[in-house]
Length: 101
Image (cartoon, rainbow, N blue to C red; front, side, top):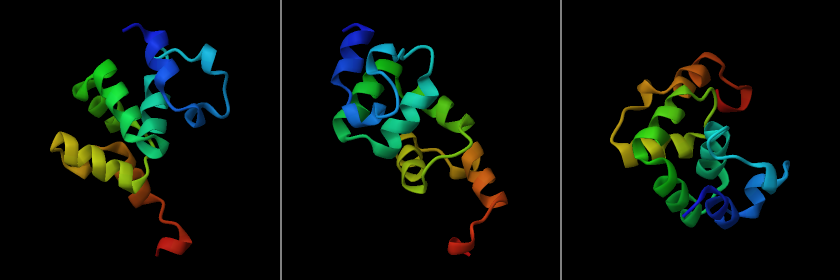
């Protein structure tokens, strides 16, 4: 399957702020991976998993500044990694919000 087929099969709500025809999975993998983890369906997850592979997804997630707590827990569970290995975990610890204190 080529890149255009993967993009066409991803949920349209993931690209609410951009033209889906202009999305390139190789140029902006962090944006696509983060959106799928936070807002995507299980089918979206299966698509990016088959395109990028688990190692690439984990590598990208480790460098993200922000990632939803549930998405972080999911990727840690799937990849058998520790939350402390992710940049977003340390960033959220440094900047607590008032409503989560």
